[in-house]
Image 1 (cartoon, rainbow, N blue to C red):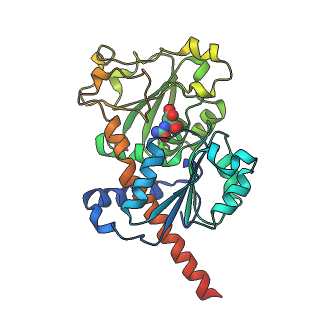
Image 2 (cartoon, rainbow, N blue to C red; image 1 turned 135 degrees about the horizontal axis):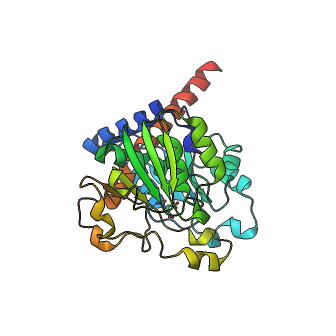
Image 3 (cartoon, rainbow, N blue to C red; image 1 turned 180 degrees about the vertical axis):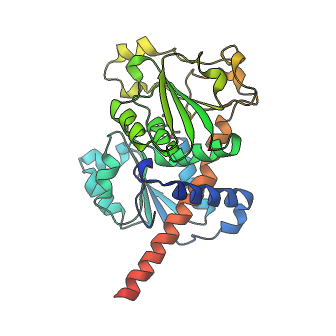
Length: 316
Ligand code: NCD
């Protein structure tokens, strides 16, 4: 992953993932060791869709590395309002910063934007496409709670539009996992993703279910997701599905004591608050892991990029 963009988790090898997670664990153990490491670096935030965790944790991560952040701000207050294209926005802003973070409602937008810039571009969510930095913090959380090999994971909810699911599923093919996908038929994983996951193969087994019940007792991790209301072409379709696939204490009666429950957040009503105080709940820890993981990723990318710049200078 040398001074490259991070667009989808398909790019990540097991070695890449382990490099980031190991660095994150080091940072987690002693954050002060990297407090001034990127004092002269600036990170640009381009968020064309709402975000709390991803945006704030990137900002916090960069500041905890000693760097600073510039934020395009809301669409309303930016030149996007005047009709500027995404290609022009990234071409201009790359001149201000050392790396860019982009979130955009259109699937494929991060890959397209990446064609126009040389600084590392991190995809923080492109429509129903991918969200690879979320995946890294998900993997970190899974590794801490259940281990990444010989893992049985259930991924439940909106598998069609949920970009965190797509990214996580691809990344898990690097490990010895059994992946169970639980959703109503209308929100199943896109067929091309299922096809790819089978192709990727490796140590991964893939199965799809319409109910959690039959599979719950075997799970080490249950990854719950929000129904992505904003991506439904028809609000009536959303209303038909809303409220399904929720879990509460009663649902978890047959679960293993060690079951780890995760959620990328925000949750609407998928996980009853009564689960929050149980040992199953790892979703707030998962959100907090966004800091060391994004610090690690930025540290690696900025370091590689400055090495590449130096090499470029000496080559000339
Ligand atoms: C997710 C996203 O934006 O895809 N949120 C996040 O980044 N943690 C999940 C969601 O919006 O449901």
